[in-house]
Amino acid sequence: MKILVCISNVPDTTTKITFTSNNTEFNTAGVQYILNPYDEIALSRAIELCEGGKGTVTVINVGEASTEPTIRKALAIGADDAVRINAAPRDAYFVAYQIAEYAKEQGFDMILAGRESIDHNGAQVPAMIAEFLDIPSISVIKKLDFDGSTATINREIEGGKEVVEVSAPFVASCAEGVAEWKIPNMRGIMSARTKPLQVIEAKNIDQLSAVEVYETPAPRSAVKMVDAADMTGLVNLLHTEAKVI
Amino acid sequence: MSVLVYVENVQGQFKKSAFEVVSYAKAIADQLNTNLVALSIGQTTNDELSNLGKYGASKVLNAGSLNAFDSQAYASVIAEASQKEGAEVVVMANSFSGKGLSPRVAVKLKAGLVAGAVELPQIAGGKFSVKKSAYSGKAFAQVSLSSAVKVIALNANAYQVKDGGSAASVADFQAANAVSKVKVKEVVRATDKISLPEAELVVSAGRGMKGPENWNLVENLADALGAATACSKPVSDAGWRPHEEHVGQTGIAVSPNLYIAIGISGAIQHLAGVSSSKTIVVINKDPEAPFFKVADYGIVGDAMEVLPKLTEAVKAYKGQS
Ligand SMILES: Cc1cc2nc3c(=O)[nH]c(=O)nc-3n(C[C@H](O)[C@H](O)[C@H](O)COP(=O)(O)OP(=O)(O)OC[C@H]3O[C@@H](n4cnc5c(N)ncnc54)[C@H](O)[C@@H]3O)c2cc1C
Ligand SMILES: Nc1ncnc2c1ncn2[C@@H]1O[C@H](COP(=O)(O)O)[C@@H](O)[C@H]1O
Image (cartoon, rainbow over all chains, first blue to last red; front, side, top):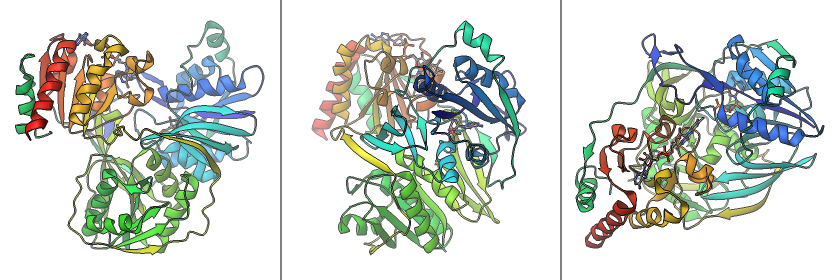
């Protein structure tokens, strides 16, 4: 079995988001980068499925050399090898195209990704990869089993859950429930340094979207304190002032 | 030229988020001086379909024969209908299924995509840009699209339903290449529950509730309000509540009219997913809890005592109105 896991390099979840150059660029000063938490879930499940010599896990990232610590982290967690497409991600269309171009001749049984990257929050890349490859995609999955040819997947739908079956190859984007986060052990960290990391140049493709400007949410007005004994007063405020009930 | 809106039904019925996307798409059609065509996939009734006219659709296409949701098959129906109708803009909801669909439709149509739109597009001087939420709700980005066709997936609760139109004509639509490769084995629906991502009122609780045995206090308040329930991450990690209720940066992002946070400290990762709520009420026994900094109304007190009182007050208010 061969599994490809797409990993993105994102600002740590505690990052205060600010912008520079007239709000056209994300301010990277002092920002710590991490492996996108959902991608870690996808990676953990891929490793579980391949445990005991049942297969290999390759991780892929579209990014510049600065993402390599994150790629090494994925190798330390247990991926067998890694690919970096050497380019700054321009938009989801660009990223998905690069990954699809790499994957198309490699015979992966499945391509796993995170539900969304916590920076751009597009939730776009995985389904785009699937469309470029013309294979099925299942978004926001909660559980994944694979018998070597067919996967059984639980996914979230509006107001409920669904169990579906799909034959390999397919793309799935993973959410919580698929696996527990794995913490790399010392052996993993040591071996990560010597695992193969292949760097490939990006291919050309049209850019269809671009961020013009960013803004941060308007600050809220000062909090109004309500006495804990006066819940009728709170309900009145919600009705007459906030007009939400 | 036209605008096409894909309208999602839940068990044959259109819900509020469906009317939101139709109203939003109608406003775009007006901006572009063109018609709005709606597309429905899966079984519904004729009444449901023609009713979409009320929200601005002039024509409704009904691909009724396809049933179980598969993003690959659905995307090809949407792309085919868009091409047939000469759609310049394709709109859908940024829902669970919309998140699987819009990227595929965008690739098929070689269209730029804005997923998570929160406002109407700005269209001027040949430029087309749309504001979307980014960085897990910590920021917004104005994204410009340079492709001939544009795809927009609209966030829930971001655009107000507008009605006033009249019944639309309904036509059957047969797509040529829609083959589903995904087999649905089982569907579990929580019919009595209000769907969290699109709820207008949300009652959410954290570790301050001490344990799952106290959640009846939270549920009673939610029932009295007609609100959905949510929780912080440690609460679902501990198994007190299901993962589907976890909100925040690594959970569901919500933007209801009212978000009541009970016994939640207000960590940055939690705030990321809830800060675009219109009104925030915080109940916490610690006056220094960071959540108060982003609250509209704050109550310092013990949740175990405050919640029953608040529930009573809500019931009293509902009783008289
Ligand atoms: C990578 C990463 C991602 C994360 N993503 C998320 C996420 O998506 N969502 C999320 O929620 N968290 C997330 N977290 C966790 C986050 O950092 C906080 O730990 C979490 O939000 C705290 O949950 P809490 O407020 O319920 O618990 P606590 O921080 O323990 O706060 C409990 C609060 O309850 C109050 N309290 C106690 N007793 C009472 C009482 N009787 N009555 C009233 N108030 C009381 C206390 O004063 C306190 O403020 C993430 C963390 C990491 C590292
Ligand atoms: N630059 C990237 N390189 C590799 N995988 C990526 C990249 N960006 C996003 N992904 C994958 O696609 C998922 C969804 O990302 P997004 O569409 O940006 O929300 C992520 O969780 C990753 O698995």
